[in-house]
Image (cartoon, rainbow, N blue to C red):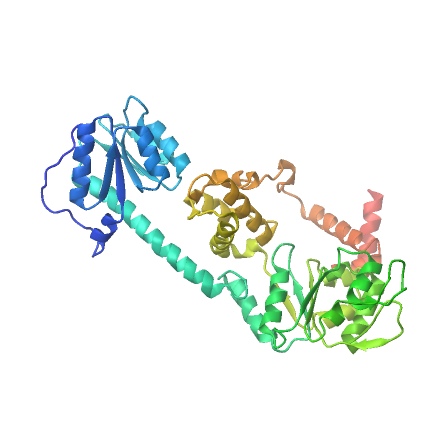
Length: 473
């Protein structure tokens, strides 16, 4: 590192009002050069400027310091016999993607500087080092780490403040949903929670229960898509001994179990028409009848139903009872998909990072800029559940103290999220779009033309004319 200028000169400019000394004292810089004398001189200069400093002529020792987090920045010479600066840059970023590397050389070129920055270097300095330029670069790094600590502290506080009964986020869509929940919770009898798979509908249902007047009573959960009709009826309403093969004793169902509390029916759109009719009676009369018993039993429960389907479409298609739909949807809460609230992704990512740090005994501190950028830009078709799984996987595989792009699942590392070329958008005429839409509606209505025309908002005659033209082609 020949040519280091140790002239004291005038006192360095802070460039910012206050805090410079504290920020510099909080940044430890490792100096790596094959010339031990020049390493000592550089360490002396850095300490004179107010930075913490350690020095070595061994790249392995410098990598160990990075791994052990004894330094947050490395000042490294480009030309060294054991390991050149570019190779050290690559190795150090593998150990800790958040590490700041400043390369220096006596043979400066623009192409080399651009290549170094592209590979992840913070700066590329020319020897002999200019005191103010070196101080300016290291001040930027010190301020970055100080800001990052403040942001981490703020995010921690924000998570605690915004974790409304486990619901994490600060986007306008989510806050609007939480505000509606607060208004509904004290008064509801029946609530319909809608939203795509993985968006957190059960979390919303539990939060409604916790905010209600029956928070101290039982919260019973039933997934309507997980059981066949006969077992689902017994699960919900109970059965008496001998009602069916294997019914060796009488058992209460979830409605009796949660009497005085809340019953959560997940995927309610999967119920058969016969069970929908029985559910309608429960809602209207608050009475249940065990399978195999003529006795009517009174229950006092709050009912939260959830679905990822559009029940209005299901009603028009004849697959869901209209009267049951209107009973359930007296109050409807829509859970926005994660794609609509990308603003919440960083908060959710840190929430899950904290969760899995505890679960796996890790001490990961956060995410690199490129990793968080990819998380924010991903479309999240699997919603919050997909994000949770991605962070869980990254917490297991991460080799450094922060999660980098390479630690994320493969579908996230690819810019297009793994989308096949055949699924990409292509230009279509309006006639093509119209034809595809009508055909999908007909398929949804299982060929029932009257229902299809109602759903499309057109007359039967218009639909028949379209079908006739299609048949003639």
